[in-house]
Image 1: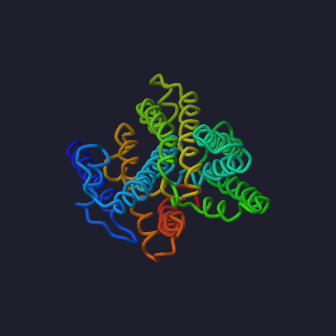
Image 2: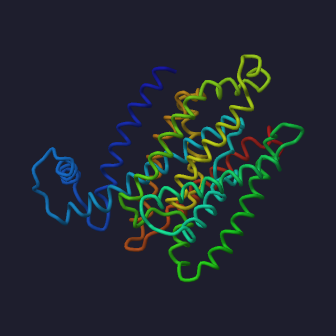
Image 3: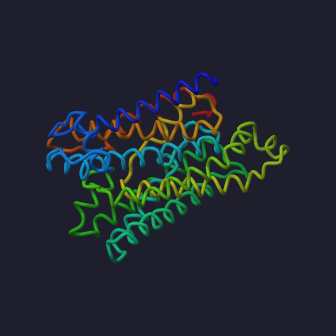
Length: 341
């Protein structure tokens, strides 16, 4: 297993760098990888200016921030999904199916529409609004899904569907009331990374970075919870405290991503499940591997979304839904006997 993990981290690291490099060069105006690297070197001060101003603008000011933002959002959603799946011991759990993404989207949308200003402090405040919405959705799911002090898989998923539908209805109502801002809100809620510059990258970093560190701190506890709550308690794990900490942290990471990108579904479902097969269930490795894999997956999906029908751009949430929905049905079919579906 150690050799497989080493090979996986080398492969994912190389794949991540290659995907970022190629995605930055692909578009309506294609740029060679060599030119992309030259612009990187010039922008970072390693090379003397020599590229055209057009290439510099396209690569450094338009495409690179979008690619990096897509990587961060994919990493956030995948890490949160891995945490939810491990905590609930449920391969079908992710921010989207649990209703957390819908709650975060509603909170962030209300922040976008009603908070005054547009500066850096506003960009930090909107994810906090999303976080409050995510916590509210998670609280409702927790209360609806709890049976006799436990969280059965079936009731949690059903509660997630109910809460997600309810919050989606509130989102639709808010969009109707948005008036002149309806068009921009619609494309945001559909899940997209268009028109996102550097100012959108920086606010996501603290939510993802701090959240991943907290989740890694509880990774050993998550491993013990996989053995069963009673076994974890006998080994000294404060299960309820770990549950609250992980649920809140994963919701915060989700809110930071959703507040910038809108609702992008199934990233937190597909990637952790695939990486668990590759590197095993140990959360010390699964969480960072899922983050890296989620970043790569979303960058690829976004590159496809903006090029397949160019110059028309498809919201990346549509692409991930096309991939994720059949995958979700496959998991349901595989686990229907265990979960009595």
